[in-house]
Every structure is written in structure tokens, then in C-alpha cells.
Length: 261
Image 1 (cartoon, helix red, strand yellow):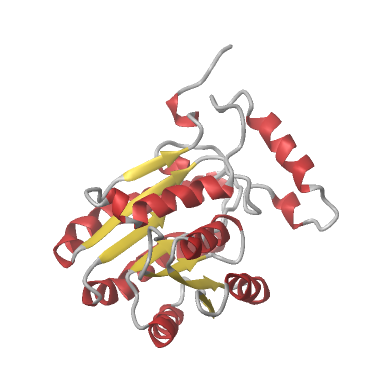
Image 2 (cartoon, rainbow, N blue to C red):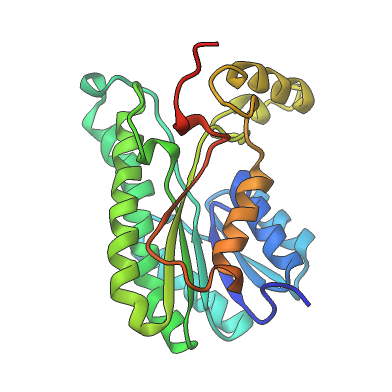
């Protein structure tokens, strides 16, 4: 038996990176998964590889409320219900705070913060009607501290923690647990754009990231998307049945402090 047998979970940003690994792992553990993204070709390929009996792809711009309604409809039509959500989709922009154009700030807010809010809003009633379930919001290491050059991103991730706590309180009577993951440096296309270069060697780029974070991170390497997926699984399955409203840092010890050695 799988840890998610009988569950139906929507995973956003599931065409690649952490979201892809979450969708694949959840399906391995018995869930039926809605692979949601704006990268249609890649997302459809992931769903096809998982299998039609286990996955459906749906185009979802998380900042558009109509898209959320359509995604929920696809999930219900294909699998009969929705009882889980992983709000994984997000974007990152580098800029000094005072140099950040308003349009750039608002776009990051629209995807990261508004997208998370709309996801909770769209699925909460469905999860409650299904008898309860889980929502996992993807925040960040930067939700727990500050980081220069990513002020807009950090602001949205701080907001996600507040939203997570409020949602956990308000949705508990409906049997819905809401938690947040706070990944540090993870080897995904968002933090490692070289992954998008078809001529790049994945092993070489991962090794370069490991070297970059060797002194910053106590565990001495960058995180892997599957490790974040493992945490998402824990927060979505019964292993975490008495946990709600909490941030879970997964950063190799980065937040613990700075080493001078």
C-alpha cells in the first residue's frame, strides 16, 4: 500500500523541478495527481509518463482565478474529487529592492503570493467536501530571514507563511491541515538556469552548485528536488496527522548559522 492511496492531489508548477518530483512521488505512493503548469508541452509529458490512470495535465496560471476553477473541474471530472494541494509554482527575480520596477514586483507577487492564496481559496471547499485533506504551501528559506537582491521574492514568501497559519486555523474545522515548506538552495531550473541549456552537463552543473554552497551550508551541498518532494509527501500523508500551521525548513542547515571555519 502507498502512503497516498485514494488521494487526489493538485500540484502546481509540476512540469519540472520540485513540482515534477512531487507529482511523480505522489503517484508512486498511490495518489492520482493533477499536473498543473503553464509549460504545456513539458507538463503534458510528465503526466503522460506517470500514466493516464494516475495523472492529468492542466494548464494553470496560478495568478488567474478562472484557471483555478478549470483545474479543479478537470480534477473532479477525471478523479471525482480533490483532497490535496501542493502550491509549488513560483518565480524568482534578482534585483536590489530600490531598483525593482513596480511591474516586476507585482508579477512576483501575482505568481507567488496571489497564486498561493487563489489555490487555497479554490480547493478548500472541495477538500472539505471530500472529508478533509491537506494543503502544502511552498515558502522558502528566505521566508525565515532576509536575503539581499531577492527582496520581492522574500516578501512573497514571508506572506505565504502568514497565509499558511491563518488558513490552518480557519480550515481545521473542515479537517484540512495546512503547512509550509521552506527550501533553501535546491538544484532546480529556477535556482540553476543552466539546467535549461541542452548542451550543459547536469552532473557538472550540480557539482558546481555543491561547490558554491559547500561553505554556506553545513551539509556541504545543494539540495535535491526529490528531498523537497519527500517533505511534501510527509506533510500530505498521515505521518503528519497532528501537524498544521507550521513552517518546515529544508536547507541543509543553512539557517542554523554562519561558519567561520
